[in-house]
Amino acid sequence: MTTTIRRFIETDTGHRVPNHKSKCKHLHGHRYRWEVEIEGDVVGDEGVSEEGMLIDFSDVAAILTQQIHDVVDHAFIVYSSDKEALSALAAMGDGHRTVVVDFIPTAENLAKWAFEQVDSHIITAYGNRLQLVAMHVRETPKSWASWRRE
Image (cartoon, rainbow, N blue to C red; front, side):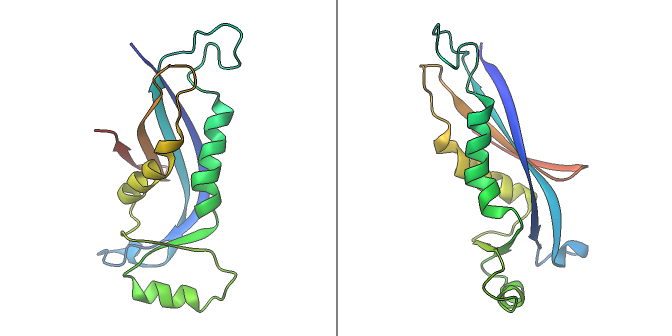
Protein backbone atom coordinates (compact mmCIF):
# COMPACT_ATOMS: atom_id res chain seq x y z
CA MET A 1 0.00 0.00 0.00
CA THR A 2 1.28 3.46 -0.84
CA THR A 3 0.30 6.97 0.06
CA THR A 4 -0.41 9.73 -2.47
CA ILE A 5 0.07 13.47 -2.07
CA ARG A 6 -0.66 16.39 -4.36
CA ARG A 7 0.72 19.92 -4.55
CA PHE A 8 0.07 22.67 -7.07
CA ILE A 9 1.29 26.03 -8.24
CA GLU A 10 -0.45 28.52 -10.51
CA THR A 11 0.83 30.64 -13.37
CA ASP A 12 -0.54 33.28 -15.69
CA THR A 13 0.52 32.04 -19.10
CA GLY A 14 -0.42 32.72 -22.71
CA HIS A 15 -0.69 30.37 -25.66
CA ARG A 16 -2.65 29.64 -28.79
CA VAL A 17 -3.72 26.55 -30.71
CA PRO A 18 -2.92 27.63 -34.27
CA ASN A 19 -5.13 25.16 -36.14
CA HIS A 20 -8.10 25.29 -33.78
CA LYS A 21 -11.54 25.52 -35.35
CA SER A 22 -12.71 28.15 -32.87
CA LYS A 23 -11.49 30.98 -30.64
CA CYS A 24 -8.47 29.12 -29.21
CA LYS A 25 -6.62 29.94 -32.45
CA HIS A 26 -6.28 33.51 -31.14
CA LEU A 27 -3.54 34.68 -28.77
CA HIS A 28 -4.94 34.38 -25.24
CA GLY A 29 -3.98 33.38 -21.72
CA HIS A 30 -5.09 31.35 -18.72
CA ARG A 31 -4.58 31.07 -14.99
CA TYR A 32 -3.02 27.60 -15.18
CA ARG A 33 -2.85 25.23 -12.23
CA TRP A 34 0.03 22.74 -12.41
CA GLU A 35 -0.58 19.91 -9.94
CA VAL A 36 1.73 16.98 -9.23
CA GLU A 37 0.58 13.67 -7.83
CA ILE A 38 3.31 11.76 -5.99
CA GLU A 39 3.13 8.34 -4.39
CA GLY A 40 5.39 6.36 -2.15
CA ASP A 41 5.79 5.08 1.36
CA VAL A 42 5.61 7.33 4.40
CA VAL A 43 9.05 7.92 5.90
CA GLY A 44 9.35 5.91 9.10
CA ASP A 45 12.87 6.89 10.12
CA GLU A 46 12.61 8.39 13.61
CA GLY A 47 13.93 11.88 14.15
CA VAL A 48 14.32 12.90 10.50
CA SER A 49 12.61 16.02 9.22
CA GLU A 50 10.36 14.03 6.84
CA GLU A 51 9.20 11.50 9.46
CA GLY A 52 5.54 10.73 8.76
CA MET A 53 5.67 12.30 5.24
CA LEU A 54 6.38 11.18 1.70
CA ILE A 55 8.27 14.38 0.96
CA ASP A 56 7.99 17.82 2.51
CA PHE A 57 5.33 19.86 0.68
CA SER A 58 7.71 22.82 0.65
CA ASP A 59 10.27 20.71 -1.24
CA VAL A 60 7.61 19.85 -3.83
CA ALA A 61 6.66 23.53 -4.09
CA ALA A 62 10.31 24.47 -4.68
CA ILE A 63 10.60 21.93 -7.52
CA LEU A 64 7.37 23.19 -9.13
CA THR A 65 8.49 26.78 -8.76
CA GLN A 66 11.87 26.19 -10.36
CA GLN A 67 10.84 23.78 -13.11
CA ILE A 68 7.43 25.22 -14.09
CA HIS A 69 6.54 28.59 -12.52
CA ASP A 70 9.83 30.35 -13.16
CA VAL A 71 9.79 29.12 -16.77
CA VAL A 72 6.23 29.93 -17.89
CA ASP A 73 4.70 32.46 -15.49
CA HIS A 74 3.85 35.68 -17.36
CA ALA A 75 5.26 34.12 -20.51
CA PHE A 76 3.75 33.05 -23.80
CA ILE A 77 4.18 29.42 -24.84
CA VAL A 78 4.36 29.07 -28.61
CA TYR A 79 4.70 26.11 -30.95
CA SER A 80 7.96 26.26 -32.91
CA SER A 81 6.10 25.88 -36.23
CA ASP A 82 3.61 28.67 -35.47
CA LYS A 83 5.32 31.30 -37.62
CA GLU A 84 2.53 33.89 -37.19
CA ALA A 85 2.69 33.83 -33.41
CA LEU A 86 6.49 33.79 -33.39
CA SER A 87 6.52 36.84 -35.64
CA ALA A 88 3.99 38.72 -33.51
CA LEU A 89 5.86 37.93 -30.30
CA ALA A 90 9.21 38.90 -31.83
CA ALA A 91 7.76 42.33 -32.64
CA MET A 92 7.21 42.87 -28.90
CA GLY A 93 10.95 43.19 -28.28
CA ASP A 94 13.55 41.54 -26.11
CA GLY A 95 11.68 42.01 -22.84
CA HIS A 96 8.85 39.68 -23.82
CA ARG A 97 8.99 36.21 -22.25
CA THR A 98 8.44 33.63 -24.97
CA VAL A 99 8.85 29.89 -24.41
CA VAL A 100 9.17 28.02 -27.70
CA VAL A 101 8.18 24.35 -27.61
CA ASP A 102 8.13 21.61 -30.24
CA PHE A 103 4.44 20.83 -29.74
CA ILE A 104 1.11 22.65 -29.96
CA PRO A 105 0.59 24.00 -26.41
CA THR A 106 -2.72 22.33 -25.58
CA ALA A 107 -3.45 21.39 -21.96
CA GLU A 108 -2.85 17.75 -22.87
CA ASN A 109 0.60 18.45 -24.31
CA LEU A 110 1.49 20.84 -21.49
CA ALA A 111 0.67 18.14 -18.93
CA LYS A 112 3.15 15.78 -20.59
CA TRP A 113 5.77 18.54 -20.88
CA ALA A 114 5.39 19.51 -17.21
CA PHE A 115 5.62 15.86 -16.13
CA GLU A 116 8.92 15.58 -18.00
CA GLN A 117 10.25 18.78 -16.40
CA VAL A 118 9.48 17.61 -12.85
CA ASP A 119 9.93 13.82 -12.92
CA SER A 120 13.70 13.59 -12.37
CA HIS A 121 13.49 16.00 -9.42
CA ILE A 122 11.25 13.77 -7.30
CA ILE A 123 13.97 11.91 -5.43
CA THR A 124 13.63 9.21 -2.78
CA ALA A 125 15.55 10.32 0.31
CA TYR A 126 14.75 7.60 2.86
CA GLY A 127 14.06 4.49 0.78
CA ASN A 128 10.37 5.38 0.57
CA ARG A 129 10.04 4.71 -3.17
CA LEU A 130 8.82 8.16 -4.25
CA GLN A 131 7.43 8.39 -7.74
CA LEU A 132 5.74 11.11 -9.74
CA VAL A 133 2.61 9.34 -10.98
CA ALA A 134 0.74 12.19 -12.68
CA MET A 135 0.78 15.83 -13.68
CA HIS A 136 -2.60 17.55 -13.82
CA VAL A 137 -2.95 20.84 -15.70
CA ARG A 138 -6.02 22.99 -15.19
CA GLU A 139 -6.46 25.40 -18.05
CA THR A 140 -9.81 26.77 -16.86
CA PRO A 141 -11.91 26.00 -13.78
CA LYS A 142 -13.86 23.50 -15.89
CA SER A 143 -11.05 22.04 -18.03
CA TRP A 144 -8.22 19.75 -16.92
CA ALA A 145 -5.75 17.42 -18.64
CA SER A 146 -3.48 14.82 -17.04
CA TRP A 147 -0.38 12.91 -18.01
CA ARG A 148 0.17 9.69 -16.05
CA ARG A 149 3.11 7.37 -15.73
CA GLU A 150 2.44 4.19 -17.66
